[in-house]
Image (cartoon, rainbow, N blue to C red):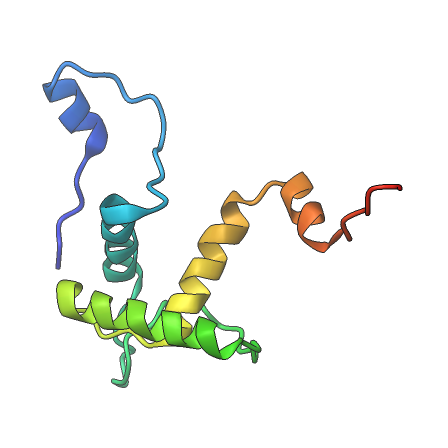
Length: 121
């Protein structure tokens, strides 16, 4: 079992002050953050099988465009290669969906579904 880092203790030891959480959204640090989430959240069920987040109890079908599924497959291949974590494309999609909905503000969500008004002529 991995030991959890005590960030407050590390900050005190460095003479620093914790001011909040920083989210990496893209690039190398975003990928490493995603990999850390996968490693921390995904566990092999007691009866065996594919590692998953034990808090995921709902099962739904999500329609995807072929290029979206292809991109998810590419990303999971990279996670498997670099992180050694066996994850499926739709597990990655579920994790990304959770992360996005946590960060999305109400006004941003409304903009996604509100039709754009055409400029008057």
